[in-house]
Image 1: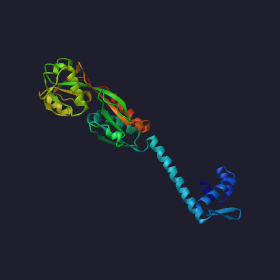
Image 2: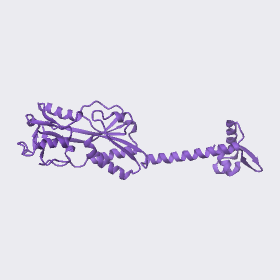
Image 3: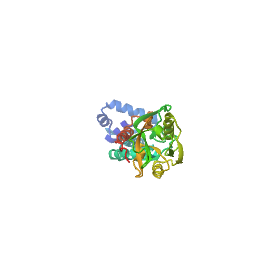
Image 4: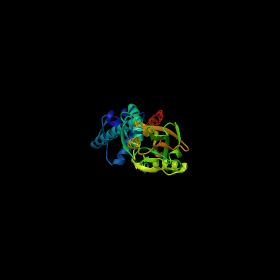
Length: 298
């Protein structure tokens, strides 16, 4: 149909042949083939030139519209690949949102202002389903050591997030800079983790240290847990990223024997890996995850 459009535009077979770089015979054969396929005459001779029939004009108009749509589609695809348009759906857990996702998104938007981001909190007990099902492009999650493989997904390690002991200010152990986890065995505990992999990491570390903590109060979030600790209701284990807002009534100390750590990953589908915009967001998350940790303090 491009040949027909060229003939209509130039008013002759020879003019179309010159414009397209074909021989006049090849142009005539292309038009004749199209007439056979459509079952109607598309051109009629007028003197030394030709003019389109009504069917020829109709078909040439549709061909021009198709060419415009193809060009528009190509431009839209180029914009998508270059990050000038499109969207990404991102899921994360609460503390990662403040500490990792927020600065990463800010950096990403400076480079890709045309990409729309749909941000939301994921289910901590089932953070991979949305990515696996294609309802999310990326999820930031805690991946416990020894967890089964995530078929069809690529996990990118962002950082290790060690847990710290959070003690009431003036506690007898606060004079020490590093504590053995077993030294907290007889203390009342404030639960800081909701059900899920993070709680299992803390429980596994306590098992390895030879005790099960006696939970006096369960808060299931880090700021509230610090408030209970500051009030003298017990001690808590809180990951480093959960201590960005430090309660003035607590002391924070490092742990050993063992020192529980949660590993933070970004999960994307293997089939989506290699998309430039998605890769840029993963890179921004890795940069944000490399920020220096706040020091332990009173």
